[in-house]
Amino acid sequence: MENKIKSNKSFDFQNKRKNLKGKIQGGSKIIVEKHHHPGVFIARGKEDALCTKNLIPGVSVYGEKRISIFKEDQKEPEEYRIWNPFRSKLAAAILGGVDDIYLRSGMKVLYLGAASGTTVSHIADIVGEDGIVYAVEFSHRSGRDLLTLAKKKNKYCSHYRGCQTPSKI
Image (cartoon, rainbow, N blue to C red; front, side, top):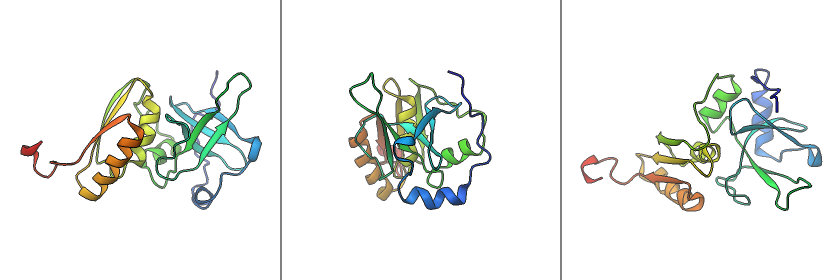
């Protein structure tokens, strides 16, 4: 399938900031298209939004909006998670037109400075079932949130204990 979107430089960041706090509007008229980066999608509706295919349908990782797409030949709907560029530098870079994000399905990824895991969860969606994300966080508070997220997602390993004292790892 030929991808229509090469870069989305006309993206209205200020308008998206307001709309991502509320509902993604469009009802049954939302179309999800592949972005030119593998594992990344654009939800086209009344407003456009960057998204990834949810690795665990029905689960919202950090309170993000989700889109369910029902196809006639499938029993279960496909679910996509909205990726807010104001909470993720990687999402902002994609919308800014970066050439390659160097992430593919099945990869092993080491993510340093994972914070509470918002971007990490989308990277886990991109690498899919065959990949794994190793997330490291220095801060105890963010590390606690990351561990909670890792238990939910069960697709990436997180480690924060001992980062302040590497000899104890």
